[in-house]
Image 1 (cartoon, one colour):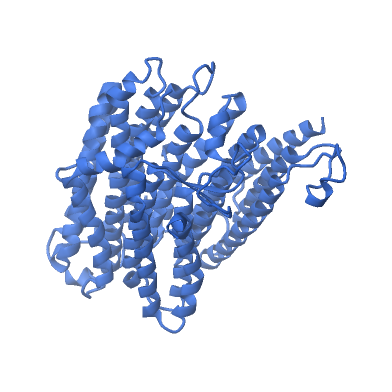
Image 2: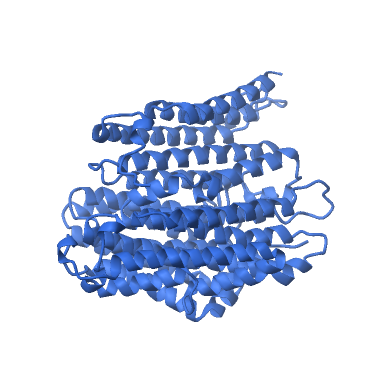
Length: 520
Length: 119
């Protein structure tokens, strides 16, 4: 039983997606309860894998449909033939992020999305999206990844245009679908180029026989471009503010998580698929160049994202531009790790500062998922209270809603890197290590952090402070419990991760890096 | 040699579809362009799997002939999946395009640009 846990994590949301609406037709409250129990159970299953993966350092392979699912390579063959799930420490980090964010997103949406006949459809698509995200984080098969990516894209696009009677959401949904279909088609071209040479879709197998030919480099370009497109790094960021601002707030954080998982798979591709070269290959994939490409994408995202955010006066567009900018930090941290890890010095530079930069990047990945989701949820509350997203017509929300004000302050201070919140811990790691790689990059990163603080002070000043204006507030009800609880989970995590960063870095992030990087 | 022309066709189709996505302004035409790209990838996979003078990859045919060549089976399964996914995507995109037309009265992206978009 316990060996089937990886399969259960994906199949529980998938089966539940079609079971819940049947119950929901007669008893909506029972449906919500069952969905919460299921999401909690999936989280417990993920956490039950932690001792095996992080403490014993094991990598679990799960072969679908095999007599013994834990045996990756069938007897008598020297290459894997089935669809494999690979649960290593990095995949676990992705899964933990997806689990917690989807739980709080669903808690928030119980009261945020009004209960009518359409709520059933919402639940179906939401759980399909969750299943797609878990599949994306666990799979070790490139085509299988494409299928899960499309599952997440289609359900994401449908959820963006959930408010079908308004003017903009259907158009935003069209944009999201267009971008994700284009990206996954390009991804499939890259996968086909890999398949053409090695006849397999398994990442580990391809990595073990990789010969670093021209076709490999082409495939790397296609896959990298497609995943950066989905993650929203700067030259490909134009769709992010349009779609994130039109989607309902709990869906925005799921879209954000989709982008983050694509980012995580980008790192998986640059290390587990095209990285870790066998010594003796000349003219192979140059990781210094690849690292610089990722770094430049990151720096551009940071800078362009934050400067565009400063001038916005639509609160969700502003936060969407900040999410582009925070993506840049992750790309910068891990990009430095990619750039130094196969230098001729035998990994001395990687030991000196490369692994620390990667730790910063991956820790920021976790932190960013939590505080950015928190901020998007508060923006949902603001939108509901004032009936608009325009900052110019919001004032004095702190009089009405103290809880959301405190939560927003936690999120805003965390995103600007103020101690003792978690953004500070990961940003400090990134500054220190990137400074040793190239001082200018660290200076840009600090400058961007200051601008982030300025921009969030603007939001706090104009929406929360100021005189009491009851006439502007449309929704005067008390904050519903589900919405409060959804935000509280994330806020507690933001504070805890900020207070005990060394615990997370030593026990979760450290194993993840040693799982990804293998200097030969 | 036939392979070579097929690969050229794949590149041409992808180029055509990307340029159509960039330059066409009608939402329906953009959906058609995406379909062209999906077909190009399908053609790519089929071309990879093709071996000349070979039969269908059916298990019962295998022992009958000693020097029997078969086309690769897995790409065919893959493009079947890809066709279904492409169908789902274009169906949903067309639905959303219909909703866009119903709410805004136009399918032209140049006119849709200013919808509630306060820069």
